[in-house]
Length: 385
Image (cartoon, rainbow, N blue to C red; front, side, top):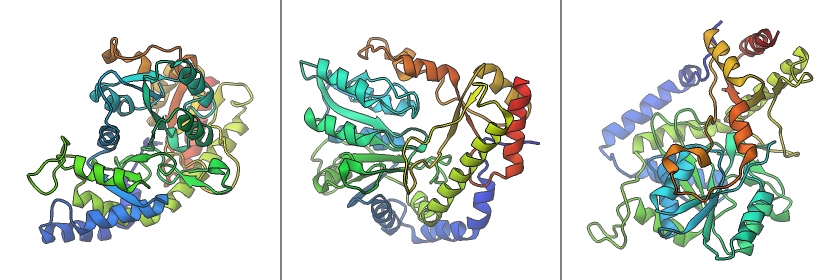
């Protein structure tokens, strides 16, 4: 049996007529930059996240970059972040001429460890660190109450890289007794609508959300070369605009997002049960993801189902040979990327190093069948037998 890592065809099958109509609507409107579809998506995403403003941009990478531009980071200033994420998290920092400083991750959630952050900030006696970029990895929020409190103590803005976490919730944020959504707890939240995401477009696109009206207006300027009005440039920006065809596709998908979250969560529970039945968990050969928060809501949306395994590279090769898709997120932590050279403050991140050698992601999209999941688990069990 073939089990692809991701198959978008089942999702498209039910939406294709509406998607086709939407794309044709944009085509016939001849409004190909900005316009009502973009504005409507921005409002709908902002409302979904529980904030006032959405700024559509060309990708999740550009969402991070334009947010850092909005902070007025200067060359040589430092940004505290995680070593365990997609390159774009660090890439935006480097493109600003700033220096990344890495705090190690929590081994259970794979997200940045507030205690590691605290040690680094306490040691920053020269106050070179000017911002914090937090990543909500794999669809589960970082521990945001202590992170936001820590950042406030040092007067630092927090940018949330929520590229993998739209709709994920963090319980009792700030002691409020209420869940807060990813992207709504810092100054700004950055999303990617890359096709593989829980809410994926039909190409590249992204969004920044914020509750800060002044910051939102600044980002709108920056995404359009800093111009207001046209040809009068208040600042140096770039061309980071979202495409209206992406906007209409995402608007059609958004009402289905929570159902897809539920499908992924159910599949994660099925995997965990199936792995337990094999004895692989008890033997310590496979460790399934930990749901670190308790309570109601989308506390983990499983953008990825990432397991820790023994003999990871051999297992990945075996799965591929048996027509089962899997991916390694991430084989090289950011603090060890070759392109850094001397551009980072070197940090000891043993948990990130360990994770990079052990993790692999299994298929988790909502349309997976129990039969497909059982085949994945049985094939892994066969590898270890």
